[in-house]
Length: 312
Image 1 (cartoon, rainbow, N blue to C red):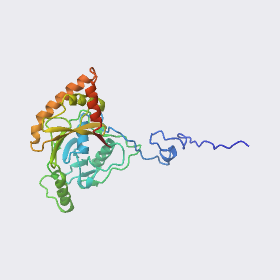
Image 2 (cartoon, rainbow, N blue to C red; image 1 turned 90 degrees about the horizontal axis):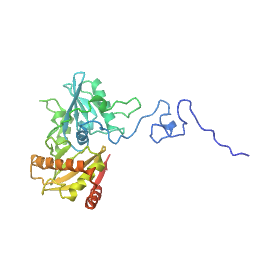
Image 3 (cartoon, rainbow, N blue to C red; image 1 turned 30 degrees about the horizontal axis):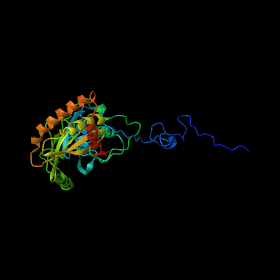
Image 4 (cartoon, rainbow, N blue to C red; image 1 turned 60 degrees about the vertical axis):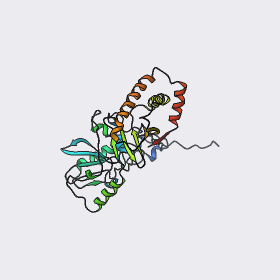
């Protein structure tokens, strides 16, 4: 008797239900977009702010700047302010003075931070003063708007760094109750942070016995590492004798080199050395394409690659 084989399961409005879903989720179609009513979309976007000139600053606000704000374009006459972190790590809320605050450092349910921010901005456009959004709901196929659709690609991103979280409230407002306690706790956890002059994505951070320069760079990782290796082999990957290159981390598709600094000098005293380092990096980047790395520079590159960690 011939061996029976199961007939393929098909559907008239999509792929075979046992086949991988074409959305790329890795799930079977019947468990994803073939399910009744569709399914949530959870596609990881490794570089959510790509295409925006302010990409390095947005990554910094998301990952390590404790207290900062950025004015976004108004929505129907309402001010919209992007902030690093909001009370209880909320996704958004509207202050009593009708100013909308949208948080960067929040719990997310999707793999696209840009889309989550767009959903939060859409929420505040309809919310009333006093309303708060704890988290952004899981994204669906209908959620196609991203931050890049709401602000111009060349939108000027110049965050204002704050010493505390007084910006959670309207000016001349005294916090009360749990909000007062939240502000006090948040203020106690702040590490002093300063943006280094006009250098994009460069932040001085005081962390206990050390200070650091954390510098979000917009170049491609391979190009940047090669340029850094060229400088490192020359002893020029430095901000002076009171500094040391510590390593780098990856965040949202960009590389973030980190230097340990002497904590005694004021942050302003590091602006000139950082500006000079930026010029050396620019020169090295321009030179990489036409002049291959030397053996010493390739060894330096391997050392730099060994001092990396990745933050999702």
